[in-house]
Amino acid sequence: MKTPALRRLALMLAAGAAVLAIVSGILASRSLRRSPAAADDAPSHSAAAESEKPRERAAPQASASPSPEINKDVQRALNDFIASQGGVWDIWYESLSTGAYAEAQSGHNADPRSVAASVIKLFVMGAVYDAVQRGTLSHDAVYLDLKGMITMSDNDACNRLVRQLGSGDAAAGLAAVNKFAASLGCTGTQMNRLMLQNNGTENYITARDCALILRRIYEGKCVSASASAEMLALLKAQTVNDRLPANLPQGVTVAHKTGNLSNLSCGDAGIIFTQRGDYLLCVLSNHSQNDVQTTGAIAVLSRTIYDVVAAQ
Image (cartoon, rainbow, N blue to C red; front, side, top):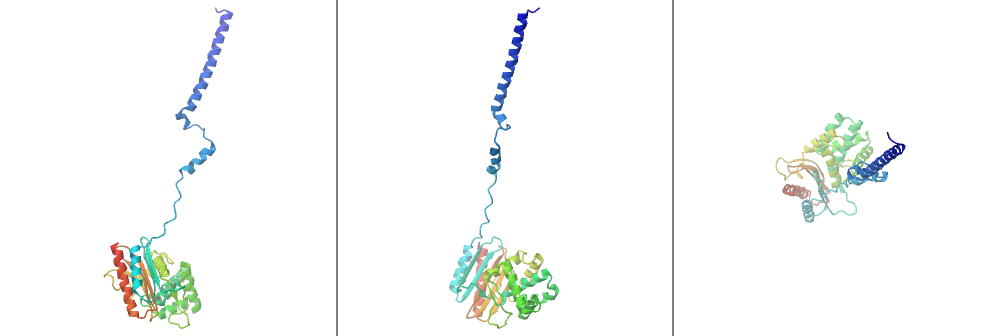
């Protein structure tokens, strides 16, 4: 039987053991918070530190698409051609797969535009298909004139289409063509008169504008995919083939539109389809002293560019 003194001693020892257990638990807890394994999960980071993590890991923003490069070999060929020719020239080349391009002009003063002749019919065609798409013209009512205007360069067919664009008013029809060209970003294109009309003005284009509408047609983005397909088929059916296609190898397809005004304008703008890649070539000449020679020069240039592209 324990004496009162022994009971007091036992109680004191038990209390001391309890205090020791509590202190040991506290020390163990602190040790765990300091361990590396526990630090990964512990909510010890500030809210500001956590909020910066996504900014540190975020991928860099994509840079702007690089501008198309100049095709130096084609550019050299264009420069050599321009140097060998007289008159006024405006030429644009562009790869339809890479976007690489080359351009050359000579003889232009402050105004970079060229007298269009029948190459302006590219834009009449686009404006007519746009009106068909909007429901203001009937496809069946205009198709034969479209075919004649593009494949045989029929001027009367072109004038009828322009008048139909204006609901019988030629001036309104010309305005519709210009509005369509402007909607594509073709700032150098201006149709001021009907074909062969003598009103003291001319119709104007640039080689670059021609390339723009042809690219849209090629990509199926001119008016609509179905309209672009029809336009491309008409251009491939061209019957005046004495310029861009003339010296190319047999079997090379060219979708194009020519233009002629005696000793004033001679040109051809088209899409050349090749095994090495399709490309645009738009060649405009003004104030030539000899249309036959200019026609031959365009054919020679077309073959030169074909050979340069094939060798790359």
